Length: 460
Ligand code: SF4
Image (cartoon, rainbow, N blue to C red; front, side, top):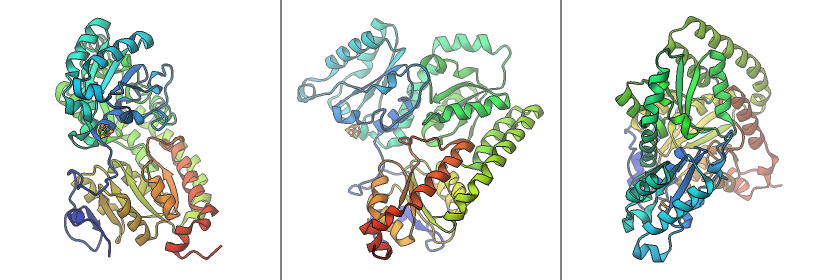
């Protein structure tokens, strides 16, 4: 029998055993120690890769812990996003307000680093003391003649999802700028097949790989939000006739705003695993209704898959029959991971997400086997219990799930923003197989006390 907080009972479901509808998309239960991040973190994830902008965290220094080191988006050219700036609010500002400090910090930093725009992230304390961040940003914008955009990401205001929305609203201010209007009218006279990619962050250079697939299909990428992104790129977003949304949790709201304001349609895709990567390319080819483009796409997929499949065989030989647990931010990635693991002969026995919707969990229920545990907004104790109960050999997650796996003495694969190897695309599928194989087959787990205690491994 599983142990969980009673209020969370319906956020956990075992396929084939429980018949109720999963509860989700609600605030975390107090005392549950959720794996979710705050609103500010959500905004930071989306905007941080914009490499020629100044990113200033208005708050205490602790909020600025999300640095480039754990959110390593790559950039060609400008590297300003790799530096972290904070107004480092202290007791004095908590009592007397932080507006003066913010004005001084912004003015000095813009003078020193000459960014092409600045984002000011509001944190919990700023929401509490009531600084007029909007007014400070407007004043600096006027004086310095660059866009200074406040991001309303006070941590306590909701969940990470609200942070994504705040970031998308900030981005739309740049998409809808007067400069962007000029560019749109200049280019739209003869549009080439052009798309925007939304929710792709160029971790380990993945954006460049994906852009190359589209280039081979004959498709131009106007702007990638926000991997390898510069401020001037964003102003070209309206020249695209399709938005392709990869990380749907983070950027569907920008796609929806653009559909409503400019009529730009959007498609949800995933760049992970063989089937979903191929489908992401075919979906774009079908949108443009070009026979030549469809042929080029078929050639591309055929070539990539014929190289990849034989290479996966040796990893599958060792991994056949092993079990995996998945806990990710948005469930769209989980769909792809379940399919990718099947290519390696592995079964998914636990799958959960921080921000899934009812429809997402219904789909997860459909594509998993009887006995699989589905969980929404889980916590470390629950995840540890699920891993034990189902005998998982591998946990796939992010920085906060890594210690859970290691404490339980099982393999771990980082599939979050901290990863240092490309896992997207066809090349990424091979890297994923290597990573999974390396960690699951490691002899080190034999030495783990937890492994011996919980999994009855033989003594060393
Ligand atoms: S914004 Fe609030 S919840 Fe987020 S890191 Fe800062 S203090 Fe913590």
